[in-house]
Length: 117
Image (spheres, rainbow, N blue to C red):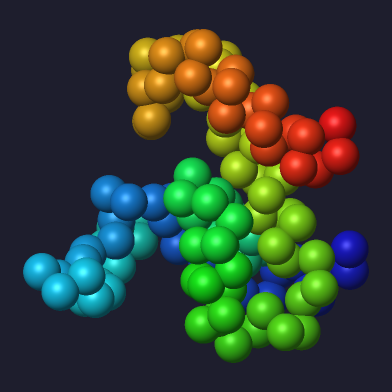
């Protein structure tokens, strides 16, 4: 991937459910905790949404202005998510999501199949 494609966005760097504020009506009201913000690959910010399913990823990406210019964004976000699940296995109960290993393995297996493995 060319450098200009991957590193042209300011990314949150740690975007997940605990940093997304939603109002009582379900509408997005804010994003918090920008301590990991940096210039980087926007795929990082879309990776967590794979926990909610591909339809959610598609919906979120449909609101991202640069998604149309980056054909590989969705796939890179999926690979980034897979890396997060592998980290979950490596760090166990110290990992952010604290998934039991059998749940992490089951989740990983489904995503690897979706990616062609």
